[in-house]
Amino acid sequence: MTMQIKTPTDNLALRFGPFLFYPEQRLLTEDGRALSLGGRAMDMLLVLLERRGETVSKEELMKAVWPTSVVDEISVRVHIAALRRALGDSHRKELYITTLPQKGYRFSRDVTLVAAAEPPAGPRKCNLPALLSTTEGREVEIDKVANLLTQRRLLTITGPGGIGKTTVAIRAAQRLKDFFSDGIHFLDLACLDSNDDLSQSLCELLRVEKSTLPGHLAKQHMLLVLDNCEHLVSESALLAESLLGSADNLTIVATSREPFRADGESVMHLGPLPYPVASDVLTAQEAQGYAAVRLFVYRCQSRLPDFVLNDDNVADICAICRRLDGLPLALELAAVHIDVLGLRGIAMQLEEGVKVLSQGKRTAMKRHQTLQAALDWSYGMLEACEQSCFRTLSILNGSFSLEQALELLDALDCGSRSRARLLEAVTQLVTKSLVEVERGREEVRYRLLDTTRSYALDKLKQRELAEG
Image (tube, rainbow, N blue to C red):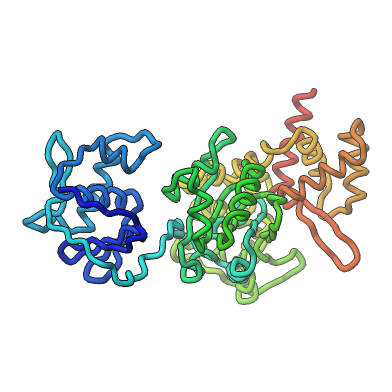
């Protein structure tokens, strides 16, 4: 018998056993407790409930639940299995959902249509990845981001590769689970390219049709986390402006090596972790006050549980942290070698360059498995003039003024280009987090992180060899 559920505005609920299903809210409760169930599974449950007692074929379910997409039968089986787990069918004699081999599925229990009382608040949707790593030294930045996201609608966290942008964004978002009543949604753009439809990827994440996306978001008090946007920065900026323009209660936080330059955007640049300067002669206790030192020691202890910071090894540890500019990814990659090379061995290898930093997590994105890969990713997104200027600036050791940079570029590498074009290239290197800015009281100066400079010098030598 087909049960007609006229429209969601009828404010009806379907009762079966201890369960209540609220069609309007796509909410399933058991004895008043909201159950966590995905949107497609909810859609499938509604189809089965509407046709209680009838056999619904897999083809009919696919057409009803994925009207504009092509899916296979495995997708149906996955969501049916999720429904059965939620309904406890595995330990019931009388099943709620019966399988009819070669035919389809049937909702087999009695269902009553009832006037819905106010439903309980459903579990807030959140697909933030679980973080296994420490956030050592980033508590201030995490607090700042969380605070900004309660006041600003578009925030971009920028910084060089491996600086910890994703970690800060996720930790800050986790603190706001109770603030955003319609949930937090995380979309990683790393696997997308310019041929992918960014808005379609978002629709698949939110389980809505593209035509209904603006209307859907207009009703939502939601946080959207867009991660790894630098290779799709223009597309990301356009999407963000479009979504925010039609959804007053939507907030977006993005991570990128350069800002969106979008309307209404706030930018927070994430710099290296604090580390001791060369002139510091520190005890172990004093060095413990630097976040880079604490992170490096923590990472070493992951390889050697008995490893400790003490007055005998503090000088070597501080030297390594300086050489790696307090860059979290670099510190992690260096610590991987502690059991084989020891502190002195790591320091000696780093004097030869950063190629020792080549054993990242197997499960990390390829561009985060080695420091070389992270820098390759950034370098590959530069225009030819920017690459040329980047290589040449590696000649400058330490900080430099803008005038010094332009004089060097004009004299050595890019004399055929106008001064305005050289200024634009330097500006872009700053924007894309390959040149750091040091703002003093009277002067703005610039520098390449030592790890970045080492990479740029290698690129310069390779170019000189290629040109004979």
